[in-house]
Length: 253
Ligand code: 13P
Image (tube, rainbow, N blue to C red; front, top):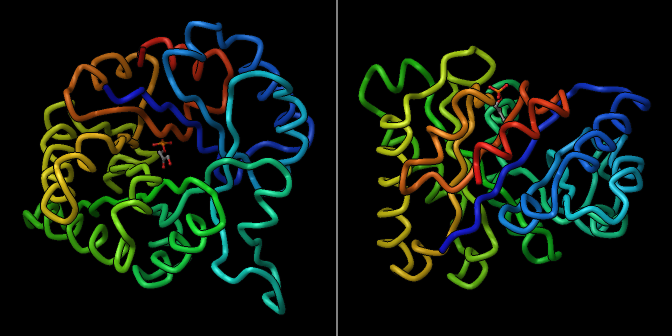
């Protein structure tokens, strides 16, 4: 059985005081049952990672970074390495979020290097994939997801890939209020799982968690989670209020 994985991607939101307030609100509201039944994580901006980790205290909530650089150290102005993230207590990192692909311009090749460095350094990466609206309308969803997965995971052994979570985030559903229907999401999740089975093994594909992201909210979380291949949610806007995020966690378990 795959344990549900619900995560909040705070993107470039909050400030020093609201990030701590949000972390405290989530920590105080996550019941022991929810903490046991699901993996819960938050992805605050880099600059607030340490204060959020402190604010979460001994709660079961994990913390991850929204990005990572592939070099271990050196003259890479503005970048943050895996070892720095491990050093302050991060467990996860996002790789290839759609905003990094489409706003910042990250390529599959760069994402692959980041993912490899994260795994090698002991972080658990969440590889984000998903098609643009025009790609869906041109029936290219499966092609796009195949390219992003094959290139993103290129050169990594099955053992290394078992550290990865996949997040399917159709770009047209991110921040738009347009959620994929549970059936639309399930179709792609099923496709991804079968693709992974072909690339690695049934065992790997059966164990890997595939989150859905894109306008996940308290009122659609439970329905999305009824689908057999949706193993969790990567939540943007609705994770910025503790009550809403807690309701999503409740809906997901
Ligand atoms: P929204 O939930 O705001 O649509 O964002 C989804 C997302 O990009 C999470 O990484």
